[in-house]
Length: 565
Image (cartoon, rainbow, N blue to C red; front, side, top):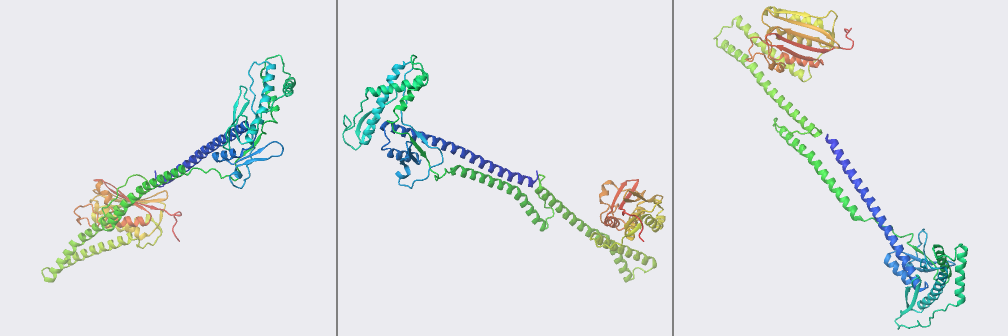
């Protein structure tokens, strides 16, 4: 995987992990707090309603409920507002007022209803007549008891409450809340007596309920009888029991519950640590090879051309390391070629210059007579050195891109015939047959005719020198699609396969001893390759020892291969 993809994948992983962790934490925390808040609200509602209902059952009145409301508000943290439902709504207690705060507006939800009336419990299988009597007695007992409990509460006496077997509260006086002693009768508070007329009224109400519901009075007191009598009980004690309350919890401007910060901070720190660790790993992955490249380039600048960097992987950093190594190898090869070139030039010029110097000193000292044959030999040697210098100059200009070309539509068949004519004398002296084969239709190339003749001439000269007497050198031209192919083939001794990659190098000769028996400066093939390259062409060689060698030039043809006007 490339370095860019790895970096992108790491960043995306961190982003996805951070987003997922934050979303998960927020959702989990919000859900948990919502559940906790709902559970706490339900618990508060149950506690407030239970405590208020217990107060109404115990005291038979809502007088003195304010301290209980204040205590509930302090324990639950809820704003509690208690009002009556009978007639116009009257506020009995408000925790904001009790705590010395400005009353706040209540929330939009429906108020809670607190009904302090007890529920009558009748035994199963009870006869209707017995059930009527129990109901009438319990109604009278509750009405009398609530009046008594309300009187005790208003007089500041503690009320003790219990329940009889039918679930109806029973009341008794206890300790004086103001610190006074107990009284057996509860001071001025007395229980009201229930007359027989009242019992008869309660009994008649029960019978009316049964007749309205078509319940058989001769059957046992089943579900219908029990429900009817419970309804009669609730109706007959309504005016004696404390009125139902409406309770509102909370306020519009209550601050919302805040999410706990510790889990969010923990996740944020964990994500930050993961990001820092990822950045460190990424920087280590990047900076280690960069440091190696920096050290290697510094050594390269100081002349250590053998310096290389270790390369592993296939990403952009590894490709940069491979490019650096290729550059270093190219620089080292160039340095070696330059060093070898200096040595080759020195080798090429040292021996002939030494010969010239020796003959000139001998002529000066009169040791040798200046006969015409000696002067011709010296002149030939000077021309050879001049040719080497000229070839070096041409090669330097060609490799620098400064060699001048005058391109025109050139007939390649005519160019090969010209080269054959120019080298025919050399071939005849060497006993070599020189032929040229060109197609009937002209083949034109956009080229500098003189430079191409120079390139082909170098190939022909080398081929004639490499061919033994009786052999032959053949020049051929053919058109292959949008290319022209020129071949120079000989029947010489051939070139070993291991030397073929070096044939276009400067001063290369097939003769390892660098002798001049076959002539040549060793620069012709290098010049030929550069000229063909400057014409956007290619040059190659094939050879077989003992059979011969073929040099191939491939040149591009123009889109319209017609001669220029």
